[in-house]
Amino acid sequence: MTALLTAEDLPALARGAALLGTGGGGDPYLGRLLAQRALREHGPVPLVAPADLPDDAAVFVVAQMGAPTVSVEKLPAYDEIGRAVTALAAHLGVTPTHVACIEAGGINSTIPVAGAAMLGLPLVDGDGMGRAFPELQMVLPGVAGVPATPMSITDEQGNTGILGCPTAKWAEDLARCMTITMGCTAIISNYPMTGARARETMIRGTLGLCVRIGRAIAGARAGFTDPVAAAATVVGGRVVHTGKVVDVERRTTTGFARGTATLSGGCVLRFQNEHLIAEVDGTTVVTTPDLIMVLDTATGEPVTTEALRFGHRVSVLAAPADPRWHTPEAIAVVGPRYFGYDTDPVRVHDTVTDGAPV
Figure (tube, rainbow, N blue to C red):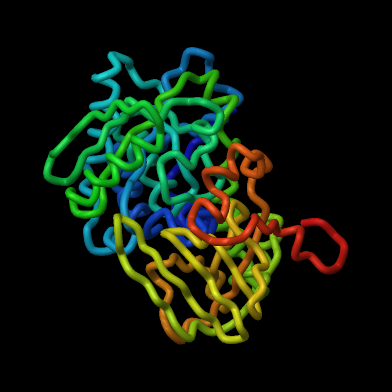
């Protein structure tokens, strides 16, 4: 089934994507502006379910790579988005048939909307993570064996390169170095795949879910009900803490925004672009790969890691990740030990006390 994604859908899409981005994925407002311009110039984008992709479809991902803290001031250039896809397609000698998101993140769920509109192509209603992660190899297609390269990388100056690497980790390391040189943000296209592989490996319905989340939050506010509870219902999660931000330690290093946020009431959040660990009273209550999302308690607006500020009253919402993220192969690349935390994964349902699984 094919639907049309219009400019009217963008506020809800950007809000929902920012929530699923678990604090990362870039500023949703900036991505929304890029998508609005593209839809205004080129019209609505067809949204295609992964199940409806032809076997021989040529699916091209487009995304921003880099530190979200930098992208607040260093905005993506409009032309970068299309150039990343066309450069990779030219290298492969393939005509793209569909554009896709590699992650559910604020800017990385809206940049592909802009790319699809510019190129006159349908957009796949799915993504490679169901959330956001900081490194290129942290995608379900990659865990399933889809190569990360060839990949393209381009910046606002017109610098464009093609990488071919033996592993996705090599692609991450080399592209990260290039991104730092390009000013800590760049636009990339990677994981080119057929429709058959996209059907097998991508998470389905991500963009539709983002729109439903965004509308649920807006509807709760309009109806003077709890927007955080509304978001929790849509994502199948639960609130693990509510408090005021009393301290944020954040630094941009090696191309990532790394740090911790401390909330009143004994909650500590640890992040690398995305929130990876949530602790309450010294006990780890949920970890990557499950989703840790921070929302403004009053409005339900998602709060990215670069937007956390002293005095902000927020709620921490946790929700289960796609089950494929809990296989041994996936935990090896997205579990807490990969990021240097001395703990095994703690799943959302492990913290439920009423006996009802989330």
